[in-house]
Length: 250
Length: 211
Image (spheres, rainbow over the protein chains, first blue to last red):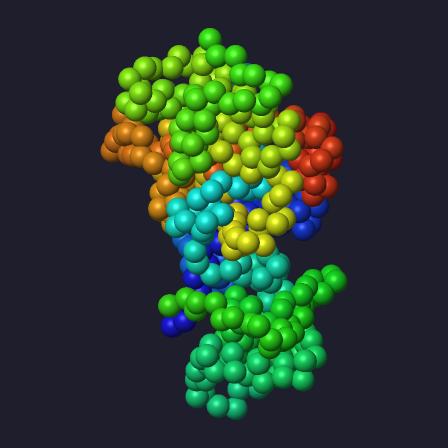
């Protein structure tokens, strides 16, 4: 099976923050019941895509389901002698999210700091000495956060009508073949919505094509652009000029 | 006490020696290290104050004569580097620097502010396994093992290196930008709008959920 390795992948707290931002939720009043279900749906999709690091997401999904269960349970009337008892079960999660935001903010400040520092050249650095701090690995996936792409994929999958099963033969789609397919579709240089590329095709085809799109974007061979309303996203071939191939993950 | 001749910009031997050392050095040299090197070469040991003065005088000369060099204080030592004004030119000469990914920056920020810190604590804050990030940061020599925690299992403790300070242009950990308090995040007008939306409670009253 083709495994997507994403070293710059965002974590489960980022997915939660993505929901909060997307739906303009109040971080102090997260509708856990709804979010837990949606979170789990994303995790299932990620499992289907065989994305790296799904285990961490499963753990947070379990935390969310636990909170959801706690909130659904009838609360026993608080005993009079124990005043501080009825704590919101979401409190710990909110504190974690806020704390995480602080470090994300600090990371941004460090980034600004290093940018200022890198304007000042030392002799070794300008001479290209090998001791420079540089990160190896593939370039960022795409100028679009992965969660937004997953969101779009989910909508495409939901919209899709399963064609009548005339045959029980199981179709096997390979990501490599779908990469060829996507590139062939984009040959005319026109941007196409992802939904159009997979219209009327079985689920396995859609998933393999999505992975192919991710891989092509990572290699810098196609562009991905989100459409307004995030119903779908556009894919477009990059100009073939000066496109050096990034290393392909094993 | 050295008194560099400001008018004629004449340099003292100590100034020339420090300039030469900082020119060839690949890492910041502390006042202590500069003094020790001078002592090995010439048998006399300059005071820390003399070294500080010589460096201030060198920077003074650079400024007054319109040179592009400055001696910066990074990671507890001194480093000769160019000024920001010539960076566009140098950038063309030098290959493009690859930035640290968001994952590495986040992990590094947590370690920088919370050091010494164990991996489970980092994982807890990020909600994600940080094996990859920690390994990469160690390879980049931005963090290092500082010892072991006394808690169960005696996990390794991580902290930032002197190289981290130099890379970020800091002299010591005291120079780290302050870790924002939540209140600051709310009050800072430069915080992105999404952040504000995230952080600002829509309904100030804390009503308990009654489902």
